[in-house]
Image (cartoon, rainbow, N blue to C red; front, side, top):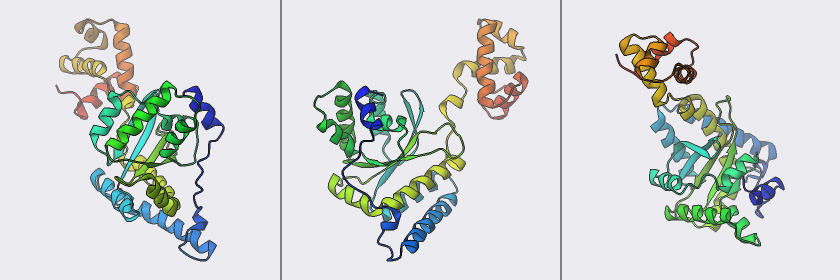
Length: 288
């Protein structure tokens, strides 16, 4: 995290707008009834998203819920490694993420800095611009974040509501955010929508995170078998070779072969070389 971002976030920078708590929703005049309504809505969200039969219907249900609240798009961003992010679920165009990666913005993104600072309060994306404008000097990191904001605007995103979510089952995605957008809507109007539906957006974020992890979370990249370990397993299977024989066949050292095998066993969830080969074949990762 850049020094200027770290100092701001660790001090607990607060956006000037105050959002309503669930008890302040104008759904009822009774405090307990308002709280109960929000809880029931959360249960309904979980029930609706759990009923999705596949990833496509899961995404459609999320969009349907957001549309009823006046929002158009969403993205679940997971921080899985240093300077690396994954977007297991999103309604945004792939071109946006491609340009983000091409610009190598991940290491400068202040939203990710916010995640790393282990903040749990949601923020508006426009808060980033507010921080930059309030700074007495323009740093390289700030310039990069202005480029990120310009990229978002290129795709019609003038603002976003960024909601930190926590892993429910220790999947490794303990740092993630669920963000919602309303394409083409200016920041002032967007802030009003967020203010009106703040409690429902919070419970929706938790519901999406929960169902995503338990049913639709894709395999993490670091749990997938890389090309070299897969090649080793393929050689052993096709030619019925031991690890040492496969290493000789591939012109690699036994030490390197052992490292490849360790990665393969870890990815396949086994401690056995023979079982690693069997699982790779049964999963269709290699053919014999």
